[in-house]
Image (cartoon, rainbow, N blue to C red; front, side, top):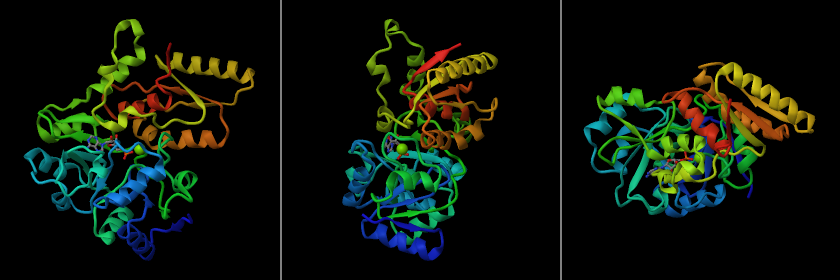
Length: 343
Ligand code: AMP
Ligand code: MG
């Protein structure tokens, strides 16, 4: 398939919108990462997204809308919590999981009776959704399993020839995917951490928010001996996307955790050893507590190291238990396949 490479000019977005209306696939920038979009209400179009990405079909997509009131196309009941969150955080990187209307295809929600919705804070994304005239289902615009794309060139590397069009916009401002918050249970539950933190959601709602058990268990699992009895079921994620191999660079990756000076020394030691063995080694070490910058740069660094032919990536863990650093650590641990050493 020949992929059209488009700009963010209105005329090009109109072309992209027509492709969406006709059931085609368009990759487009958002403030989090690039998305691969299709008409969310067209099951055949959505099926093609799974195919292009090589994504398991039980992993549901986020549906993007262009104005808050359009959430009414996807769900019936707007609770006071939903309304507060929309007022406080939209447009922005917060995805709300709500009960779906029957008109939302099972394909879009991976067979769940809930739907994930977001209003992105990105001009080209809003223009595209508006001109298409339908909500747009969009997972990240990468091949399933590879690092998320935060620059147009990352999208082109993964999807050129597999989708109808790619809109080339600016690099993504945030760099990691949205916070996913489930509002269908008794307590609002974070299924995926992002730059909108538990603390800021709690402040907006005036009540407690929890993390899905799989997120906190994953952190424990890293430290656990099999003998500690962390069972497979403790790990079972509520957000289907959390169970798959994710964000993995081509290189082997090891996360080094501990006191900062020890981490730096250990990374230096392992780098020297591995280079002596003939390995090309890449290092990811962010400034202390520079979590926003880490979010912005992390996936781009993985992709750059892959293009440079790095064999092994050594990454310094971020010490943050529930803020933006925690969200970046969630991606870092998955990228490394939970391969971590403590110093
Ligand atoms: P991506 O599209 O790559 O940004 O991933 C979307 C994330 O949202 C995945 O982790 C999905 O599993 C999650 N998600 C989407 N819809 C739902 C839903 N209805 N319930 C729970 N998680 C969802
Ligand atoms: Mg993704």
